[in-house]
Image (tube, rainbow over all chains, first blue to last red; front, side):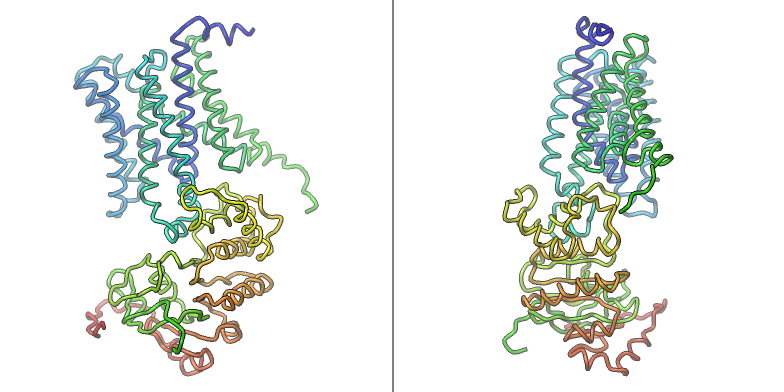
Length: 288
Length: 249
């Protein structure tokens, strides 16, 4: 029985690497996802994940499946779309959600077109769904660096980030940290998405960010606990997804996201903080 | 003004949105330690005036001069735009008042913890520390925000309709804090609608209806003639309004 969990990891190096990779992604992605969710920017994260594609695709066009080229391209495109969507919503009548939707549809179509210009369908699948079972040393190093930087940056920016969500007017009245904090946070989102992109591809990268975050909301009403829960959910879904893909011979990326989705649905039903079960059977009211 | 010094000075200030004035040619000064009510009909520019003082709105014309840094102002906006669904405890919300002391990542010392507890006690929220802010009633939330104001320890305090939709008991408790701030010679500017409360508690009043109508001793300002004048303010703006040529000093 234990072998079911242990053997694949003990035996195959690519499984070990994949596990290290998803743990790194969970460490950075979870907390960033929690803040995205609390800032009501879940869809922004989704849109930016797709926005990375054309940049990575240009990198691919120039240098093939090269880690630095696709990373730099992705970062570049992510930042451009984040800034452009912000500007469009600020200076035109279009609200941010609509302008983000426009940008990400455009990016996705553009990215797929660029990859098809040169590559095969296999390459396209690689870009869209990632290659979590083929992470080399430099990719792992990139993922680990991104999660380290993310955790450190969030520790430093914690107060203004929280304050900007809860009471932006108050933050503005006591400090000028608001705007730089927001920009750095967007930078962290892009960085984590680019990291997730290498393992899970452009369509699923955001899954390791938003699903653990959304699941964590059902278990606690404390933001620190929420971040911890989201990391745990991310690691558990990475682990179980890899095992699932190994034993059932499923593609690894989707299996990981499906596991995260399963945890989300379980939390949605059973979660102590507003889970469905507690809504249906709240128990008899208290005395005070 | 005798020995008192000015903390806020308005030089022919016009504040507004687009090019439309919401506060038109306000001139005057607020001496340190005054307790002043800002009164007027809806749309008279009261909230706009506070935004101008805090600096979130730049004057279209004229100048607002502050003595001391803008960080010396504590500001409680109208029905504060607080995300009540955010998972934050009452304690942490109140502790934000220490921002000027602790900054981005300074620690909260034991002395500060005592001060947070004192502030919670002063507004009657002992026992609420660990409660998420989403569970507070309107009055309890306002008490928490007053506790945060206490911790900010600012020489100038601006309150925008702080007692709207607040029950009598809570209003009385919070009004006691306002009086205490006045006794500590802080400057308090409050936008209010309850004229009886203004007459009872606020020695100075600014009556405004886009144009300043009267400014001075509350008893004189709130005369029937002045109030009638304020009520006659034209709310709709004139789509063909000419450019204002009144000189800005």
